[in-house]
Amino acid sequence: MKPRTTRKSFPLAESGGYAPYLTLPDGLPTLESVSNDPKQRPTQMDVARIAKVHRSTVSLALKRHPNIASETCDRIKKIAEDIGYLPDPMLTALAAYRHKKHDASFQGTLAWLVNTAPNFQWKKLIYRRFYEAAKDQARTHGYGIETFDLAEKGLSTNRLSQILRSRNIQGILVCPQPDPHMEIDFSWEHFSAITFGFSLKKPRLHTVAPYQYDAAIIVVRKLYAAGHERIGYLSIHDDRMNNHILSGFLSETFIAQKAIKTPPLHPTECHPRGIAKWYKRYRPTALIGPPDIEERIREAGLPVDELVLTCAFLPHSHWDLSGVYEDAEQIGRVAADNLVSMIQQGERGIPETFRITLVKGKWIENRPLTPFGQKPALQSAASPSREAVASI
Image (tube, rainbow, N blue to C red; front, top):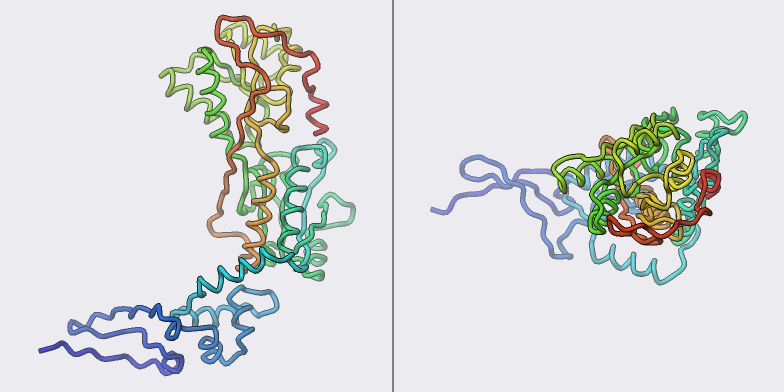
């Protein structure tokens, strides 16, 4: 005898043409699959009819638009889930295609949030390239970018929040901070926000960052391939980078040699006397360090022309060192794309689980990696100084 099935009654859902459960002979409920037939698939009109609102309200509520009350957004989202509504992928693809075919109309303004300090002028650093690339990419989505400085006199975080909300600025790009482990107390719940790198300790926002762990591995492998066995590492930036370059250096060195022949120089020892003492003890033939590594080696009185100097986070592709360029332009574009997507999906506030988007760098060989045992060509005395690094 064929098992009998009965349909549970859901009056509101049935008015949208949906009955979610079938009762099997053993009494266990099973979710009835939603039809792939466009004629039977639940639509926004079905959601609107059940919720007793206009279809445009449903569209905005599903994106958690700030003009729609949070309670209404939650109620409409729940109804959509109950009846099995899903966006039509073909219509979504068509909308994206039309958007690419035409210049985006003006959608609004995004905030570029900076926190300047006497020793930190973001326009002079690689972060300016983040900004320029993000600005260009945001324009393709119909957004402009305006800078707001937390260090501006009389501008408290409460006042800034009021300004942004009054101007309906929904998205914030948070520039890297002056120092590592910094915190910003702000009304994040009203905004979609994304940051760069790891200098912002609290809150933990979605982040776009260079893939520095991978960059360190690339540099170490290139140096090993060139014949170097004693590779040294020194940096004063590890806290800002969440120690990713140090981690990549240690892991690749250990895997390649099963031992660390040249221990990294601790950041507190990266001064001329500390560098000289470390070098004389371990005698590395190649070094991985900051962009101004050549000046630091000269100040320590070491033979620059006998060392191969590299960097895992080059600020320019034409910097006078070999190493990995962090591709600031791509980082800025990805950040803008991610932020616009968050706005469109209504993703606001501090995320429960923050995402890290890593952008792979590019190997740049601006100087030869002279094989071990051969004297490298004399390196230019005009290599960028710390002042030059601060002005990029």
